Length: 230
Image (cartoon, rainbow, N blue to C red):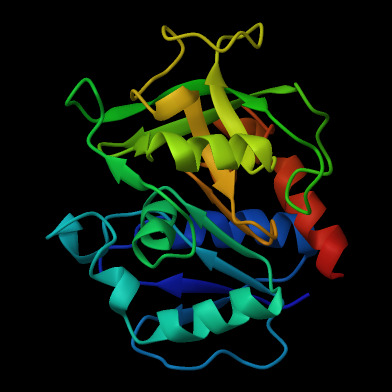
């Protein structure tokens, strides 16, 4: 397995997610600068990490989505290469048109940094196959613009096609307004594209892969990816 982590000016979770991938695969990913225009032909996983690309100027992820490397990321996505964007990476995927919707400012208007509970909506994807549908995970969030928004037609389409990956829930798996940490539409915490080879999510599974961090619930995602592209 050869993976690549795309690094933008302002990225700050690239090493965290690289470490999580190395724990799962035994191999450290490549770090690809955003101004590059190509990826090695044998790269079989592309990762957009969290952070504050370009200082979140204009809109979160909007400038990064137009970086030179993103044309290559789009080509790889069209060919079926697994792509995952976490937090700012999710914002970039939406701004680049690889995922529908947009991430708005949290409903509280405050930065949120704490563990949340996530409900796995489907195990039928290369990212979530190590989990079972309905499983509750404990994963940290750290964002100011994590409020997922899309029009009702788009939301209905995501639901109908099984493209909702995770929802915010309570510790018992109940999807409630009280468990929605940022005001996201229908408690959505992560979504797939139509072919389910692209995943965007606001919580940080890479920071739930080491017992020292209080949870290893994110390990299943990286283990699943290692299995698929091995």
